[in-house]
Image (cartoon, rainbow, N blue to C red; front, top):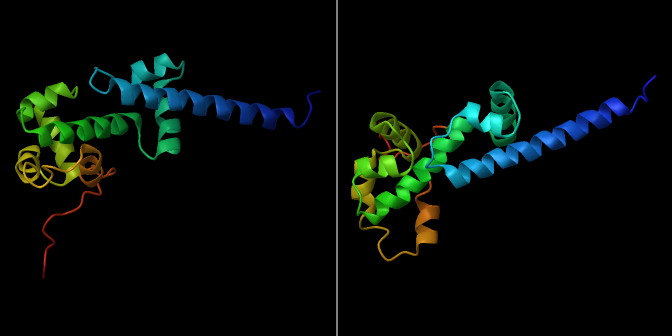
Length: 154
């Protein structure tokens, strides 16, 4: 007969193990955001099923792995667009997106304006501001909570 506390200890140990693996996935996404990554490959890298990884990642970080990856890519894209020396298409491919349409749609969802509009708007306002401050001010908002630039007045 097993000790009554062993089941709880195993569950807690398994949870800690899962959290460590989720952290490795998140770190890999942060590091390799420009590489072709998919949930299956990320899951294989930490010996989890894709479904289990997606569920646990969402519980731990509030969004699924693919959404987190796209947020990282859009964050990097905003920095490249602020520099102003690359076209939107070049930025799209530089951050690891293979579809300009998907990139533009996700960019607009997170930032609130299209990549072209963002590039025009930020070309002047962040000039001369240290990059660490510009990054904080222009950081995308996750989970479709983009700020609107011109509030609708009724």
